[in-house]
Image (cartoon, rainbow, N blue to C red):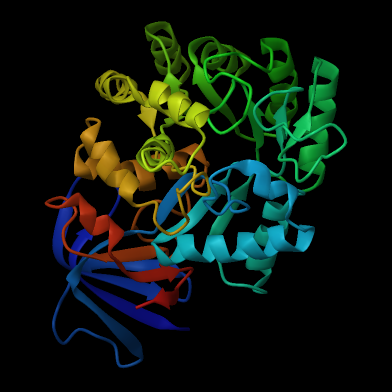
Length: 405
């Protein structure tokens, strides 16, 4: 049995907002065996000690919204030029960047050709290094909707969605998605920011289409997510039975009340729109894209403050891979969350405890507790005093194996 003891200067266990000083996390093989105060001289002879006494230690972080196929390119036209093998290679490299930033678990929110499923399988088999992956396979969208590649007729490129235009087609697509190994169903409920020719506030998949797809997910005990900016699309997704709303930037009061009533999660992805607005000022992005991002950001912070006060389940997700929103750099989302009303500890809980519950993996990850998988990260500085410390990852352990030190 391999024994490792982490000597932690500050330990945020992900159970509540408490931080403990001078703690020892005892790891046996890939599990946390115990968590107790550090005692000098109490180290077994057969244990390796890793000194994190000057670090802030957390559970391995969970990013509940990434796209490993995407590299932060300024538009989605690049998808038309990439070979199938390139999608797989980019996915591997991007996922490894996420891991090195402290994200030991990622939820991929849709890619091309089930390459996220292939990468997950390769990681789980030990073929390649990467974080734990919870995958969507290919998302469901409508003709001309967000996720339906807007190339010239006859030029399909890499499509990130199964196109459905009726409840029956939605059922078929959901079954197809699960057939090839998806963990969940991803629906495009409204228009988006990076998609040409649609509006973020406009509903796309109908209530009936979404309900048909979610009936398939629910029958298998699976969760689901909906790309949804606009108020009507958000409410349709909630009425259909969605597990989480992604983005939710144009939500209204009724939508907030419905989220609270149904226990729906929100993944706010502030950084995605923020980066588009930020780099849009340099002229690096199409004006129509920047205008849509500005619209989405305008009231997002105030909406989040309201939802925090209401006690709505809000997790952590970044949409990494979208324009100038690069993998491995997504921890800036923590700072943006604190600007929108989160306490630093609350933002950390969103990326640990809350997200583990969203994925229904809270029995194995999301906190530093006895019996949980040994997914642990550490950072230079105290993020409760300076949230930017979360961008300075110094140590990563996943499944009891150290990947960064």
